[in-house]
Length: 153
Image (cartoon, rainbow, N blue to C red):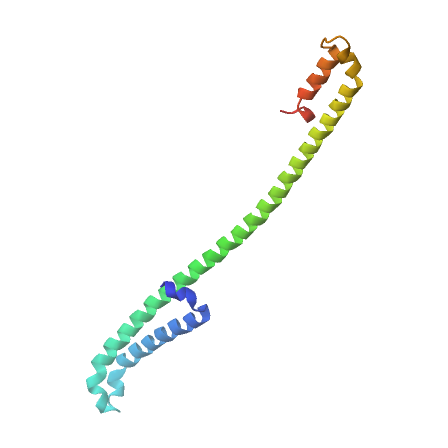
């Protein structure tokens, strides 16, 4: 039934319903055949053949109607899945933008802290270089540099 995917649904519905209608009409006509034979006696030999063909066409129509309904069900499921994928893609794009914005903010905060610490080193340079000892000011600056900006780890 994969070939049904290439046909428009209105055309499929028309064909399936036409076959089903022909089968129903054939069964009804063949069951009422004994009343019609009185008016057309030349059709007597075709009664059994008409009944068999009508039942086969009716069975084919019922089968095709079931296949058509199943095909429409799966087409609807595919459309729903595609809509969900589209929504998920939009949410993913929004989330990516938020993550990128947060990342840029964090990088900016780190750069700001780095600039501040470099300025402090320049200010205290003479104190740090004076005795080749590690001055308490240098230790406090290095401790500040090792801290995570914002106080979170």
